Image (cartoon, rainbow, N blue to C red; front, side, top):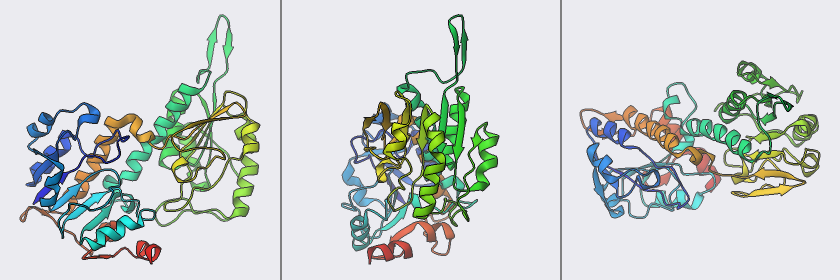
Length: 373
């Protein structure tokens, strides 16, 4: 089976789909691996590292001969891929619906890395979680770099400096890593999540859990927090206002896959914070949790810096690429036929059922089909 690994189309992307070590594992499966020339240049990795791993270096046009195409970011379309090929990457299928239609019309079997089910067997393929963990780490580091004070308590001859107060909204993968990172840096950490069940996880990392009674809550079958009603959002905003006002750093992580992010922090709450404080809006790309945040910009309101970095994962590009590549290799390996030396689309498997968006010239994922129709 001919496998081709693409460079990223987004010139601002610092991550790449696979590192040479991952390529070595794909070659070991028996795949005929080609890597687009200068794939590793964002990370200073020379083409020779990939040839040493057993791949051949090829121009972008070589993807037209590939049976299986791998990449990281959402592509601009299936242009150049042969009919019947399998394509795996982030696809943003709820938003990039024209792209999804184009993949279907081109008879490409498109697998979305965002749609990998959150099940035990699929954990090693879950790119959303692996990247969110690094994003949570980077959110704290970016906030600390912009905050005009130190995070830990310091006792000096000139006096004692109080530890920084960090408030984190959302204790999913990104939020938990942010809690752990802030604690390691010596901050006092408080966190809130709509799922009371995560209280134990927050406290196990050294954080204090802010309890707000929002009524019946829980999580979706995919392991995500359920969407709040407008009344619940208003109640949450009011209750967490005191924590926001006291915090030096606030990090918001609330995203709704395929829908605009919920607005959790108002202009009035920002105005109540101390000048010099920092907010990191991890949902800036999908509308933002914070009033006034802008994608990929630092906005200063009432003396508070609001960070809207949409690629926090890319701040640790080498580790992010390593983890994403591992997710890719695990996915390919799981469905690899060792005798035929090829990737087999098992339509009966729950992982494929959850992540296969287009196949056989049509959109086959029911949720995406509903969104498009």
